[in-house]
Each structure stands twice: as structure tokens, then as C-alpha cells.
Image (cartoon, rainbow, N blue to C red; front, top):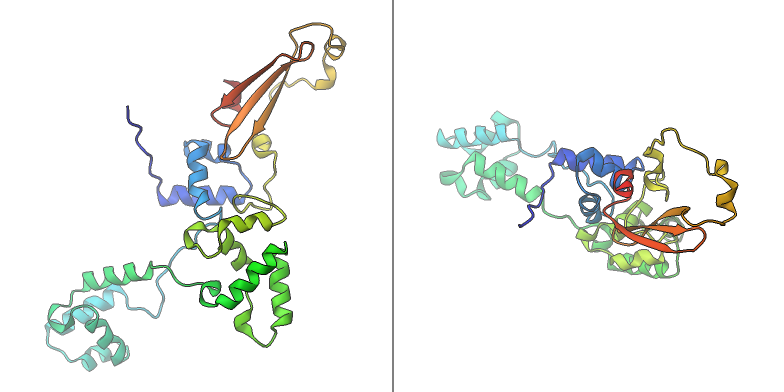
Length: 276
């Protein structure tokens, strides 16, 4: 039977990024949005764990209501200057708006507004894309294992009078981790001091989901029988969780006396998956 791929709403994606920033792990986030840890990883991977900036309409751009006023004015055979006086806009802005949307005769407000939204979504060139010299300098410093903070600080001192040769450390991080932009190849993250596949929150710890697990009536390891510590009888097991690349996990069970080992593949590192 073919598996149906789940699609996530923008609200769910925003929640994933917010929880990731707070330090939650893949399994924890998956439980909140009722999805598999692998699906959470897929959402985060393309942007390197960095929440995309929400696009908003520039206040200087024409609104859908203004475009409707332009359409009404053109239908009433008003001149461009008459329409600009009505809207309080410059004649050149209205003239360009009409010209780029099929002219006076065929201008439609809905089509013009839809085109404007589509054009606003197109990718914009970043600082390192515009300036190849600056990008090359950043790459060289990364290969020397300089941190983005060091690179940014050095550029401010070395090129204090050339603002176009300066870049923030956050821009360097985004260029490294946001794969969809393809500004700096993702392999350059290997030169960072913390070799991570995506950007982690400062609240994130390697312990992952442990902070979310509530052990009820737990017994301390220090209270176990001395017979177990002496390794004199078979049947006493020790368990451990091993996490690998690609959000893969296995559980190991080792008999303390015979050292007989069982390895189990897990669906996730959350408490329910490990328990099953």
C-alpha cells in the first residue's frame, strides 16, 4: 500500500521552528505535532534549523485596494495624473504599474496584485552572492577554522573604511546552513568548531529528550542488589541508546555476566519507541 505523504500547515511549521529554537529534540517536536521525528528533521533540514523570515508587504508598495482604484480610474478613462492625485502617489509609480500589467486597456487589479505577490517571493541576492571577493575571503577563513564571529570581527577591523567588505556572523551562518540558497556549500560546516548538520539553539543539549521524560517511581542505580554488581548470575541486563546520523537510533541490551548483546533498531529516541 502506497504511503500518503503528509503536508504540514504554515502554523505547524512555525511551531516546529519555535520548539527547535527552545531546545526541543526531533521526537519531542514530533509528539507535539503528531508526526514522526524524520518528518520534523525534513522540515528543519532545508533551512538548517533557521526559521525563515516571514515575508511582509513593503509599506511603500501598492495595496490591493489601491490597485482596484487604479482599475476603476482607468475604466472611467481618467488620466494617470488624475489617478495619482486621487491616491497620493507619484505619476511614475502608477505609470509603471499599468505598463507592467498589460496597459490601460487590459489592466486587472487582481492579476496585478497576484503578480506583485509572486515577484515578492522570488529569491533575493545576499551579501556574499553580490560580492564574490568577500565570499572568497570568508571561505578562506572558514578553511582556517575561524568561527563566523571571528571572521565578522576581523573584517570590521581590516576593512573599516570599506563597508561592502563587511558581513555579519549571522549572515555567514545562514549562508552555511540554509541549503536552498546555495551560497556556501554545506560541506564547509565541517570547518566549524561544532560540526552540526543544522543550526542548534543555545538551549539544545545532547541529552535530547531526557528533559521531557518523567520517570515515575524510579529506582536509583545505587540501590540495586550487590549480586548484580558482582556479575555472578545471568539475567541482569544493562540498556543504552545509541544515536547515529540521519536521525537513526538503536538500543543495546547487554547481559552483565555473559556479555551477551542484543541490538534493536528504534523508530525514534522518544520514551514510547524505546519502551516498545
